[in-house]
Length: 331
Ligand SMILES: [Zn+2]
Picture 1 (cartoon, rainbow, N blue to C red):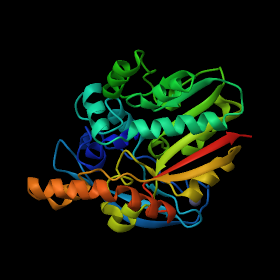
Picture 2: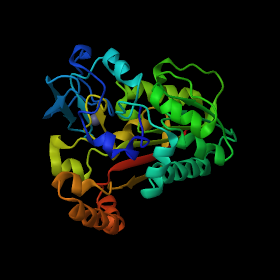
Picture 3: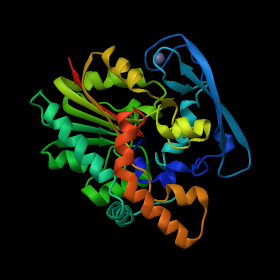
Picture 4: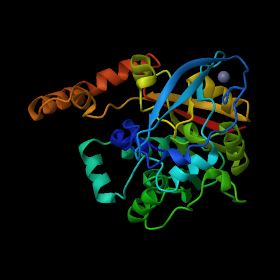
């Protein structure tokens, strides 16, 4: 699940046809009548999102609903839990084959991404952790960079992640293995000082239930550090339902706004301490769309890298960054 972890791969992220699913596993869940974030009942149809399968030519259309109170979007009807399980047993990041830690680290050298986000989130979570508890839970641990960053901050860690492709990389990176389960199936009685959920909540069919469970797992004064794609990002505004990063279906079932995420945490016993936005454009973002020759591609890539920082600063300040990070203390 989850990721930027995921985000390392817009390659994976961006392509909605990369998921190892087939039409035969497509089963839908129940229709939702309340907002998954704020519980509001003021819902409206937003857009239709088409989903093309890898293994055949059939196309499914999902309906995206939007809450008029907090702006959060979600698939309605959502995919059934069994459908998502079929996907996540391999990967939460649309990997269709195994990767090695060397490949991912090479990517990070070229375009530092997960390593930077993981170090930042682990540092901020530690700073806000007032529980005195030095154990951390990494939910949807992906390739293991968040677990590694938490250990570098001095934490003993427990990691959970269902995807076997990511877990192989995790082992190469950290030496041990995550517990290979979905968060819904995780049981642990000892409290944690820090819980990290990076790119997880948008995958969960019942995010409120997950937040309540995190609250039960945290020590008093402990911190939840959470990152999700931003439904109000410039990419979604520009591309609408054609956006395949935030609106990556069927894996992403919820599309949060700052307001929705804040309300979700506050109505489940958390005090929000910090919120920020981050934006990182993959170097090939333009060249991929324009499909130009090698020379032009490399010019476009260097342009993207050059204007990365000023562009990110502007869109983040407008509330249109790619990701929202939130840090909340169990009150
Ligand atoms: Zn809402």
